[in-house]
Length: 430
Ligand code: C6P
Image (cartoon, rainbow, N blue to C red; front, side, top):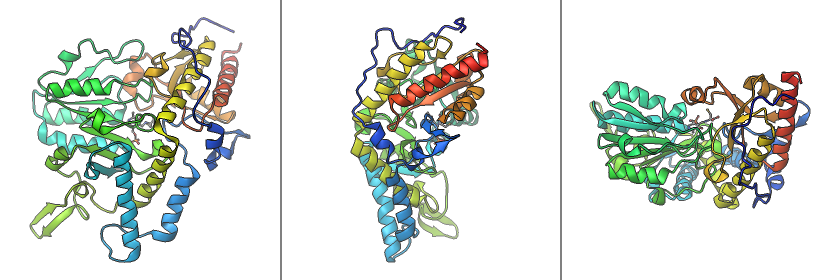
């Protein structure tokens, strides 16, 4: 076997992978019907939860029960089903507010996903509050969802877009942060956890600093809130965006958390039914928060499924989920370090990162690797992970990525490592 491509990111060093997890992944796995199916004749090893998490029976049942017994439109009808549907939809908002420690339920706006939540801020806050000469600050590790809306906004408003750089280990390089976030900065938008590097950013420190300079902060929580305990009161973010589907909930529903004074000043992004107070032929004004931002029939079944997902996560406990993730990532980094032909990206210390790990190997294109692994029943993602500038910055056109969640165990990682070794031998002809 060739050893010319040295692993630059061994987890080993001084960091010992803990071998105990507070979660029983095998028991949890039984709650997820899809995980009992076979793929290409093999046990499904699902290592693509950063793209979307699998759904437990409790979530699937809640959606089925909603459509079977309660389906109606919300906020409109006076009949029993409409009242039940409205209560279930609004209960989901209460649960979401509690889950992220938001002060008020009015601060929770249901969107389609993280992408829509960030676009809502760029549109409804950004277009009215930014002008030529002012500054938007983002980081070099952003997903396109937290990059493209700001590129467009900068073009429209004449504001400049400034980047917090990253260092060779995949951390934000904060040495010049006081110059980057300056008195002209109106908003800082950064990811809580990178979907490619796994890095967990020090969002609270950056929020404190930005607030001292009178700038607002948006945190992209798409990878953060599924894996970390979050509390909006402590974090003090002005905006926090996330998607239900990465936290066991259904696709098509996401959340924009925003402080209510900001929401009060912001204009709606969409206009129509549900979001109005009064309409005349030449006049309209808006409903109260949060409905001002929820035009049209919302994703009611999605909210019901999301509620069940939040119950499931809460029952397990987010602290325990974080400990479980840390155990898996430490073990994965340790095992990947054994594969000298693979280069692993992102921080080496599991304390500073989450369970999404990207890697490349010479002679094996990430797409070939993903297909090879799929033949073994192992689902990983390959590509630029909607972070093209970051992928290029790493000197790659694509990477392979394995990402873990509550139903994964060390056994899944062992199978990944065995399959990676086999892939290397197959493609490198050794
Ligand atoms: N990342 C991944 O495989 P949506 O698509 O709106 O639910 O989430 C967008 C998004 C925003 N920010 C971060 C940090 C993300 O990871 C994602 C989604 C998936 O990495 C799909 S590209």
